[in-house]
Length: 88
Image (cartoon, rainbow, N blue to C red; front, side, top):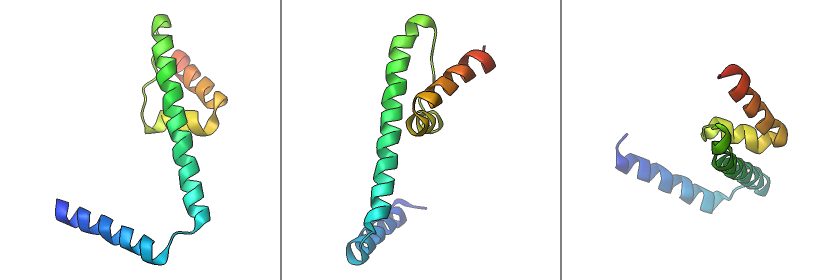
């Protein structure tokens, strides 16, 4: 796909949203998910900053941020367990 096709597709989606409108519930669901993923990324960042002294590094990617964002403390604990048990 060239760049003009991508830009045209994005503009078509924006025009469709402006004309038709989005259901508020769907927009609320997507925004809550994005906030949780952002919080998960921030938590992993701070864990990596403070865990560097102890040899702890959890990569920050979509998979790990989704786990830490949606599952919370138990998700972070699961990432710790995977890091220490499965990846010696």
